[in-house]
View 1: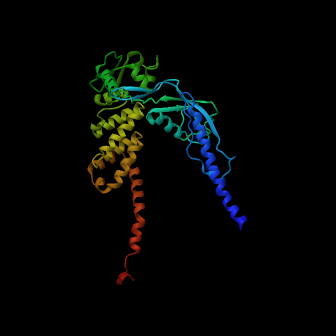
View 2 (view 1 turned 120 degrees about the horizontal axis):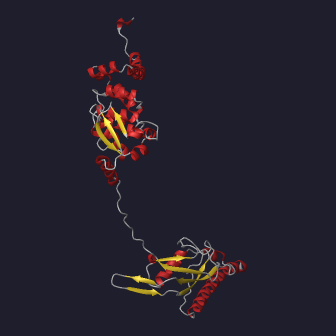
View 3 (view 1 turned 180 degrees about the vertical axis):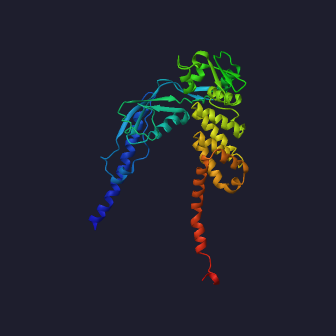
Length: 368
C-alpha cells in the first residue's frame, strides 16, 4: 500500500516542480530582457499542451531569437496631427516558438508601440502573413524582420472612354466626303456618293481586289457604278464600312433590309449580313415571312431562313391563307420544297399523339 501511495503522489510532485521550473525560466528570461537598451523580449505566455502532458523537463518548444526593425518612421496619423511612434531603424528583440503564428507578434508589437495593427506590414523575404510562423518562413537566429507603414492605395478612377466618339467621327468623315477619292454612281439617276479608297480597300475584299493597280477599270477612274440598288442602302453599306455598324438598322422595313442583305452578300460583308438577319427577325410577320424566306434562301442567310421556317410552322394556317405569301411562293418556287419538308416534320412530331388518342377512344355499340 505504501508503495502504491508513493507512486501515486510522485507525478503530482513532478508536475508541480515542472510548473515551478517553467515559471522560473520565463521570469528569468524576462528579467534578462529588461537589462537590454530599448529592447523587449517577447515570449508566448501559454505553454503548449504537449509540455504539460509529458511532464518532462527535457522536452521544451524550440525557440528562435530575432529582431524586428522599423524600416521607416512608424507614424500614428490623425486628422489634427501625426505622431512618430517608432523612429526609423529602431530595433526590437523578440523570442518566439518556431511554430508560433506571427499574428501574436503583430498584435504584440502594434499594441506595445501604440499603433493600430492594420497600419503595419511585416516583411522577411516577403510580406508575412498572420498565419505564417518562424519555421514556415525559415527564420533563423539573429535574422531581421522589417516593419513598414502600410500603404493604403487610393482607388484611382479611370477616365471614362467611349467608342461613340470614334464612330461619330468616322461617320462624319463619310458624310462630309472630305478628302474622298472614290465616287459611287448609284441608281438610274446616278446619284453621287463619295468615299475613301483606303477605307474601302481595308474593310472589304471585293473593293481591295477592284482597286489593285491595273486590275479593273475602277482602279483607274475611281468611279464605281451600282445600278440595282437604292442610294439609301448603298449609303448604309458604306456607313457600315466606316463605323462597323448601321445606326438605324432596326428602323428599316423588310424591303430595305432585303436590299441591304443583298449588298452584304454581293460584297462579302458577313458581319453586315448577320446584322441584317437579326434586324429582319425582329420585324418578321405573317405578311412578310414569304418575302424574307425567299431572300434568305437566295442569299444563303441560314439564320434568317431557319427562323422564318419555324415561324411558318407555328403560324401555318394563317400564312397559307395570306395572298402575299402565295404570291411570294409563285415568284420563288424553290421555297416550296423547304416549306413542304418543314410541314412534314411538324406533322410527324404530332402524329404519335393523335394515334394514342385514337387507341384510347371508347368503343361504341356499332363498331363491330
